[in-house]
Image (cartoon, rainbow, N blue to C red; front, side, top):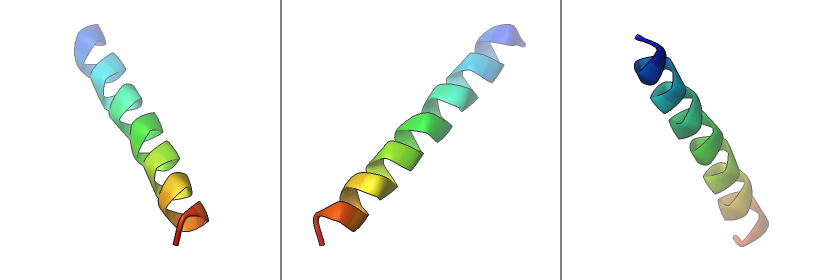
Length: 26
């Protein structure tokens, strides 16, 4: 369960960074 939570958190943070990057480069 802990591993699952870590994975979800990492994916969320990567998603946020990706969205920020996209917004900056459009």
